[in-house]
Amino acid sequence: MKIGLFGINHGPCAVPATAAAVARAAENAGFDSLWTGEHIVLPDPQAPPSPVPAHAPFIDSAVALAYVAAHTSKIRLGTGIIILPQRNPVVLAKELASVDVVSSGRLIFGIGIGYLKPEFDAIGAPFDHKGPRTEDFLAAMIALWSMEKPEYHGRFVSFGGINAMPRPVQKPHPEIVFGGHTRSAYSRAARLARGWFGFALDADGAARCIEDLRQACKEAGRSFEDLEISVTPRGRIEREAAKRFAQAGVHRLILVHRGRSEQEVLQFIAQTERELIGKV
Image 1 (cartoon, rainbow, N blue to C red):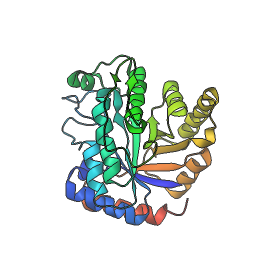
Image 2 (tube, rainbow, N blue to C red):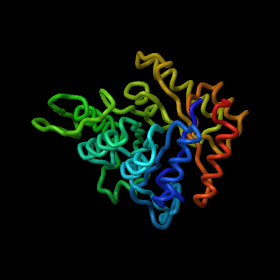
Image 3 (cartoon, helix red, strand yellow):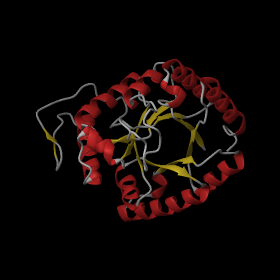
Image 4 (tube, helix red, strand yellow):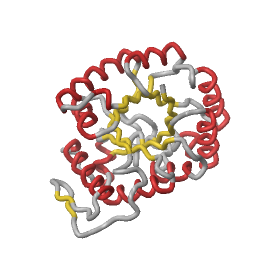
């Protein structure tokens, strides 16, 4: 069981010195990965389904991961997730290729389609056709990352006669992970990604998602065993609970720290090292 840490770009880790200290501590403790969350803007005042207050700071995912890359050497760096249909895919491909280069090939590209309409409205991004738009944008990004002479002509993005350097260190491109708890999300993971990321699940909920992912892989003609399953558990996780996730088929737990200060986050990392890492 791999253990990741969620929240390297917000909460206490929105302070650069804290993010660096937490990243180093997580790497030294044996965490396999660090993960960002993303909201470019938030509704003010907060209203459902917005998950956090409008004043909550989120450092941009690419900036945060590039920063902690400079303070670490081997821990993987994941976007958990980037809301792809809100982004310009050509610009984002450049930003993430740059993160992969400065981290020596440690990027995991976690993708979601988003759900906060006020956020889309503020950005000027259409709220309709989020799934098809996401798939189109991803295909364009992969073309930029992997083709000798990048060219792509899709429904929502089209280009040719251009190039974008540097290319990612990872070949043919960084690892791709899709998030989401819907049939369409499972299909995207099965068809387009190395992995799937489920958020705020218990072991039984994870097991149900995994069964749906098995079916999606079958429909896509893909071996389910090739798909890496990552889950952020709901609430605090102990060794026996972690074992239940492993028995359900989860490969990585991405833990949310609940610390309100650097010291509390570092204590969480130390506790996780003692209780979970190397024991599940």
